[in-house]
Image (cartoon, rainbow, N blue to C red; front, side, top):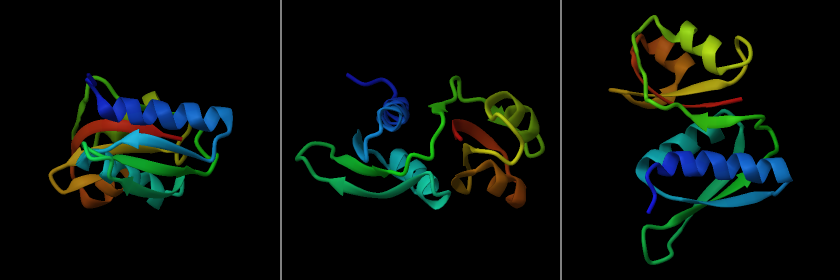
Length: 128
């Protein structure tokens, strides 16, 4: 039984990248799909596709060997509109390096997009 599927996805991507694999298979959900879309848009991963296995399904993710570290943020801290700098310093190694993935009322987005749209939300994960 899985408790946090997003954490499982991030750890399987990170572990597959560390050993040099070209792809990995992860569990699927709508949240994971949105996070993978963001990672693809930011060019951390290549294409990903849904595999219907008769149950809940899986994603096959193409890896690009660009990820140094990725993980979920627990607990999922709330972030106000102007409060992203504190969390950037805590989870990212340098400014303008990496992304924080945030869930907002306007959907799942990066912290840079949330700053631009002037919205706050809850931290889900980080990637650099």
